Length: 603
Image 1 (tube, helix red, strand yellow):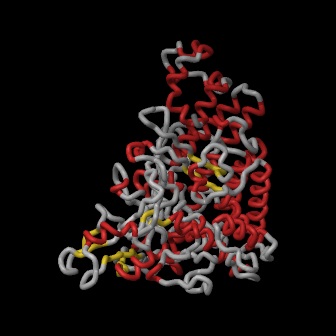
Image 2 (spheres, helix red, strand yellow):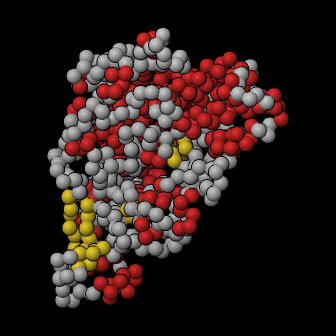
Image 3 (cartoon, one colour):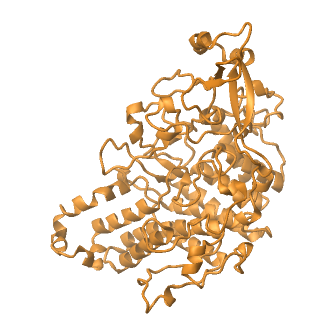
């Protein structure tokens, strides 16, 4: 059983531990002696497991706030939101929160700080204490980074505050720390983890606990964000150097501990224990009625409804995103001369990651244990072309389904209890973070990290190496061109992993990538008229037909707008407003200068 699932049966276990009998004899369990609890490794472990359970992100990197990273907030998936309608107000992004609740950010930070305070008071061996401290401090850094990337600097609360009362209300009102101070504290917490966590755990039962490499890799992500244009409009080379040093160290530590790229891009999601690519994970297990286990709903929601046991068809890729995949030689569509792009055969000769991520009309998609299953999403005319009906029930809104990380073998009856782990931070991202920070400090030669990281990922993907061994990359790119190539690679490699929104935001790319545009869908229609098969005739023969011939002979396309009005992301969204209720609750908080206040999130 993975680490934090033990939390769910904590109460039962506590009442069976003989060494705790005197503790449990107390009638008022709320008055338990903290020193006693945190001097017992089992009880301390249960408390730490609660910190894990409260703070590990869900699928798509969702941390429980306003940003649901399933692709809706980028060019990956279709979906309306105030972000893209130019209608964000000061209460839209309410992750700042007020009040004391285990479900809001400050409540979670308080629980982390309580654990840090109490474990320090305990009498566990120093090495054990420091390791647990490091795990808790990792999550404090994780939570603060989530706040800072939304708002800029926030109050740094590093000790549990006393309950608010008339006598101490004023002392609990803290001003915002500068963004620089917050980043420094985040880095300090992560550095403690790098010093005190193991490189790898020896027991499979500990799979998923934070390692030294995970702390280092997350530090690399933080400092890369801090070096990016959102936080670094003056392009400070010192920040890029700090990001490079952190990401190089992360790669070095992970390599030494046996981490690396999984041999399979598509199957890496299904190797759980000892997956070399899984640097930071949220573990799930097949539930099957066992309340001590925790299941996800990703598989259930993502596959087509008629192949599911509930609401399927979510997370559907847009035609825009599908169209932008490279060809098999790594060149962009329309640029490749080896594989000319034909929009009528859009699926043909693409980067192998295309077929491992996108399920399209006519695709062979191993699913439900059927290695030869063919997916069909076309529409047929039922009234001389005036009415079109999908072959599917509740068909995809975009004409495509997300195939990435959808189990090829799990059966319909087990879907509600699917247990595939979420990988929040992959070794592939570490390579990309290192590549980007290397390009940022002009390490742009073909033997240095910027190119080498991209080559490693494209080689693993199965892209043609080409005569020059560059896997479709343009040789001799300088800083700006290489940074663009890296962002493009991130778009493909990390598709639908909750990273695209943050990449567009930290690079301030929303205006140039999306504004004034509309995300689109592809409707594939079965032709009608003389010489064309009836829908029933086509249904009986389609699985045995050559797909290229089907597309050229029997189908026609219609590109459909899925946004209505043009996307309208505004510059002030790069740092959201502190919510009104938080400012009303704490008169020392100052609003961001892009929202009418005097606080500069760039300081």
